[in-house]
Length: 140
Ligand SMILES: CCCCCCCCCCCCCCCC(=O)SCCNC(=O)CCNC(=O)[C@H](O)C(C)(C)COP(=O)(O)OP(=O)(O)OC[C@H]1O[C@@H](n2cnc3c(N)ncnc32)[C@H](O)[C@@H]1OP(=O)(O)O
Image (cartoon, rainbow, N blue to C red; front, side, top):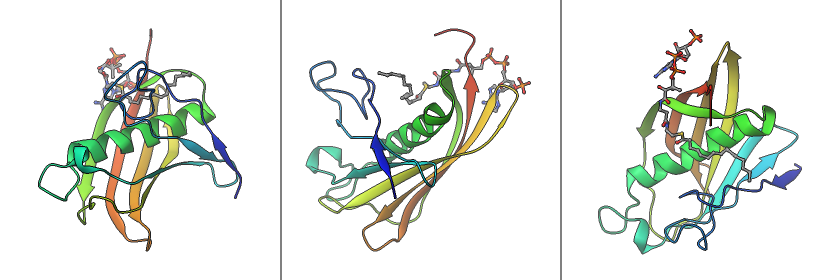
């Protein structure tokens, strides 16, 4: 497995830099060059919770959104935005656990990119799954 750390976007809530965005989670986005998917490792702290001890689903959706956006970016340098995203929460993601998110570009059609992503715990159990459609922007 050959993992490359992608640069991140300084203003981003997920992959940014606290100097540019004080609320950024500052997660590293890695690219697996052999299997062509993103990989984001994280250990949630107390500021990520909704219910006590359980990570807020909106934060998990944001991580999956980035995992998929960067899977596109690694393979196509143009700018795509999330147009539709479907998230299935299968198991709670726990405070202080060790998790990994992976994002995949499944296929492209015209201006659309179809993606998928998942979050797994350290035993390989799938906790969250997502599918999304990104659209190539005319401007940004
Ligand atoms: C230092 C290095 C930095 C480098 C930099 C890295 C950047 C890499 C990391 C980024 C990290 C951030 C990752 C978070 C990503 C976001 O969160 S993006 C923010 C959230 N999303 C948005 O704000 C999008 C808001 N929506 C829109 O702007 C517009 O509705 C859209 C999606 C652009 C579409 O508008 P439009 O271009 O006028 O759309 P339209 O011409 O009607 O449709 C175009 C095509 O898309 C399809 N389409 C449109 N909407 C949909 C839909 N909802 N479902 C399915 N298909 C749709 C249409 O069917 C059409 O398909 P074709 O007929 O061409 O095959």
